[in-house]
Amino acid sequence: MSRKKILYVEDDNTLAFLTSDNLEQHFEVVHFANGKDAFEAFKKNGFDLCVLDIMLPGMDGFELATAIRELDVEIPIIFLSAKTLKEDRIKGLKLGADDYLIKPYSIEELILKIEVFLQRSQKQATVKNVTYTIGSFVFDPTNYSLTKGRETTMLTERESALLKLFIENKNTILKREMMLKALWGTDDYFMGRSMDVFISRLRKIFREDESIRIENIPRIGFKLVAP
Image (cartoon, rainbow, N blue to C red; front, side, top):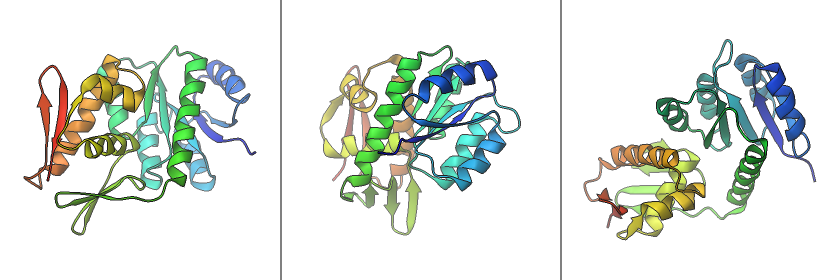
């Protein structure tokens, strides 16, 4: 079986060597020290997952992730960064990243997260394409799209997973802790803040249909109200 191919972008040579050396025991790793070269390689080669530093020369990690998402809305992206501010973490997730690890990070945790995202991507590739109708929208979880009439909005993998969870439990209160564990495997505070960002974006999209709303249930969680 061929090994999964990881695009790894890090400009710290020492950290890049140590991380690559560990990752190469499990995956095929292609390393670049700047965003521009990494993006050129991404356009020409098929990768299964991206691991990106944020503070990169030329094209930073946020810009690189944005460019990658324009070409591929499905590939998992993990940010590695020394930027610890909540705003940076939320920005990364808003851009479509699947996770955000703060330096110094555990290489074991990074490998585990990579394996989880790769397994999830593989399962989604084999799942039959099922769509859901919610109000005047059609949701395609396989292709991460939400369509109303002729207008289609592309969602990130996390947003799609969140919306699918809501739809499968429509008109039912979902506990916040359960939602976090279903989406991230933990009810970590920062993941909770990230989920709030995704819910806010879904609410903005659904403003076009008054029959759909995501209610905040104080001290409990949320409920998708829809026909």
